Image 1 (cartoon, helix red, strand yellow):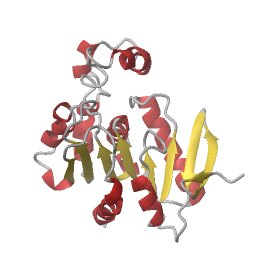
Image 2: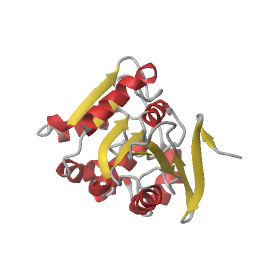
Image 3: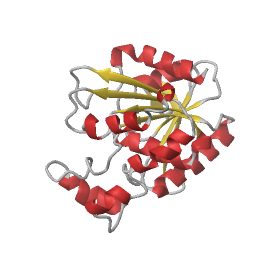
Image 4: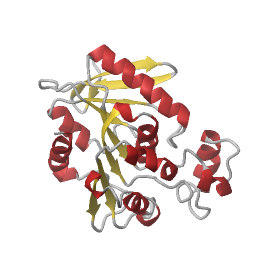
Length: 240
């Protein structure tokens, strides 16, 4: 039985020790990849719009949603494999929501040659806020962070190489365009402690960063929903 992704043909296969997915456009392919970095299938409106414009949409399941180096390295190998198998451009549009934003930032910092554009939505930039806050995320800290980063204490996060905020200089150095969305009432990933730090980091490179607030919205829903075509237009414009 053929696998489908919201009506589009989808190949699913084992890659190394995890599952990989490739979704095919139903129009003439443009040779480009949109890579969903985390939460496969969640809030897929942008991916669907990009499929309609000829993109292949790809993803793989991560060992952790907290963007450690092993997952970044595996993504690079996965992109190499997919781009060669399907004759696609290796430089991807990264679509990263919440912890997927951390995945997008960290991956880009290590492998900028595989990235053409970042679309990050309510991104986790600061591990001291998420999942490091004692008052809200202790379960995530114990069950996920300590597995992804063994022996790292909260007091270590300021210096942790893989804290996304510490990877931003490498991303800025790559001179890649970034589209960032966020909800002004987000109580899960506090914008003032995450996305706002990215804005500040880009203060000398404002031409690279486009910020789109969703007024009176929380962490969910991600994307622009009824205006996903407008967001896809922005992606195409940034890619030239």
